[in-house]
Length: 204
Image 1 (cartoon, rainbow, N blue to C red):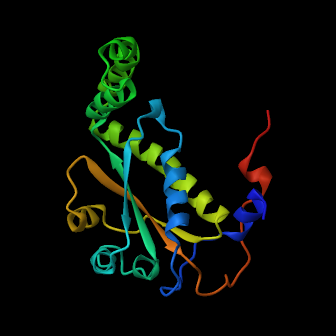
Image 2: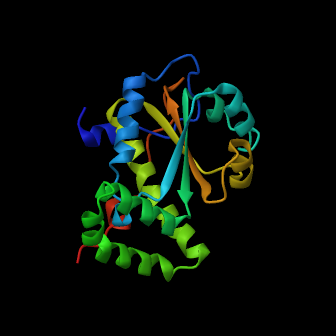
């Protein structure tokens, strides 16, 4: 199928077949798509937990309004926004420079720009900024799954605090979305609906 055909095919699957596995090679392609998602300054202010453990997902289900996708999916990706922006910049410079002092010196103007930008943001603004970037990564994962013929369901119906407790997350990681991956147990019962083009776009 073409790219657009894949998007017509995909839908947010509510009933997944728990017996059907996502191949590890295909899962790796989805993770690679996430890794190459564009982000602000290239900082990738997010972390994704790849959860296959069914016992852990059963605990998460109780924090997610008992939605069946959490346990019926073969894989549950948990997208977390990072709020450790300043430390993230330091790590970015260190990795980009390879630890070389001269390379770090050349990168100093970029580091200052990033530090000044995030330094002007309060905690809520940093979280909102990280959430926006995390949403882009989620979108890339959805499209990659569709390209591979893997069903998915993006989810925000869960307690972020509850999920963080189950995963024992540090304070700088905030769960913002799940992505259930697997294969549909049944075809959709109604055709895909989208608002018409004139409702969504204005050409100027």
